Amino acid sequence: MHRRRRRSRVSALEGCREEEAPPEAAAVPPARLTSVQQTEAAAAAERILLRGIFEIGRGSCDVVLSERALRWRPIQPERPTGDSKYDMLCKEEFIELKDVFSVKLKRRCSVKQQRSGTLLGITLFICLKKEQNKLKDSTLDLINLSEDHCDIWFRQFKEILAGFSNRPKSLKILLNPQSHKKEAIQVYDEKVEPLLKLAGIKTDVTITEYEGHAVSLLKECELQGFDGVVCVGGDGSASEVAHALLLRAQKNAGMETDGILTPVRARLPLGLIPAGSTNVLAHSLHGISHVVTATLHIIMGHIQLVDVCTFSTTDKLLRFGFSAMFGFGGRTLALAEKYWWMSPNHRRDFAVMKALAKLKPEDCEISFLPFNSSEDVQERRAHGSPKSD
Image 1: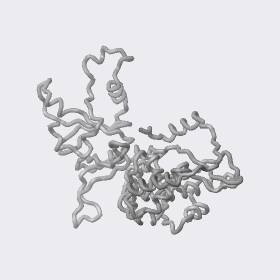
Image 2 (image 1 turned 90 degrees about the vertical axis):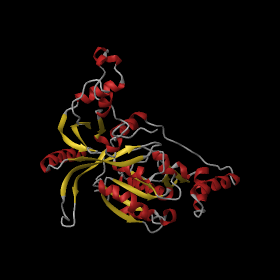
Image 3 (image 1 turned 30 degrees about the vertical axis):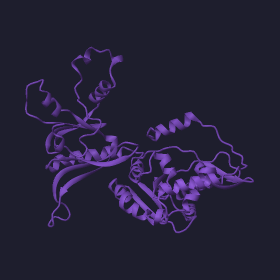
Image 4 (image 1 turned 180 degrees about the vertical axis):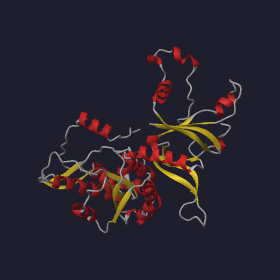
């Protein structure tokens, strides 16, 4: 586009389109409306909450806030109709409010104004979906120097964000400092904590000190005020925290864990931040092993149901866990952990070849519960689970 260099950081979203429907659309029967026309008709039917003038990307725009989206169109002087260049510049752009995870007042602060500087406008923080299941945080600046005008819009944005009840407000963080060459703390401090703080999520961080520490902590820890538990580490850390949460759920429900057939689900969801040498569980959950993507999924309140296994011997529960812990996959991961000094790709390839060379038959018995499609699908929809690619 001709004005590409003057746009805001998210003004070139993939969803940009013209608001007007083609002239002949009125004559098309409702059953034959295209998906674009149906979307535009739904947008026109939305209740408008606010309308005003903001500067976006160095250009003044007519901005409309509805119940589901924020739309803006550049304000241009009148020109003859049919001017293709003019029509291109005046295309409407929008973001959906469900993709906004924070809003802040934008101020210019100087040395003399340490607390509150000159108001510049409003900044929206947005979760964008990129290629290969990757999520990215971005911003949209709405510039207007009027305190009263910005205050009205800011309050409306805050009210809308507060309406997303599925998003966490307080999280219990368990961090394994030994994960991946002891880099987990740095990963959390530099990539995870800033995003959680920006989203206004309160956190209580505990650094685990030894293997099994997470089980001891979650056995007695008060979790009443938290909306979820987040594990920062690799597959071993995630499996340990999952075991601790499920074990606690069984005991709280008064169930005998040995020989259990229908385990009670954990009350709190578990978030996984991939910060280990192997991150198979996080990759299978999000389709990618990416710290920012995992963090944004947690912030946005996305819930993904997963399979859980119980490992038992002679009618005695050994632990809860994931299928990746058992058999060839689990053996390969355990072997890869011993070669931490190799690069991740070389370590995995080497572990696969070595595990194959030593592969032997194993005697075991596997039983499973049937998938209750109606209940699980309804729960996924209730939690707003994203569709997987």
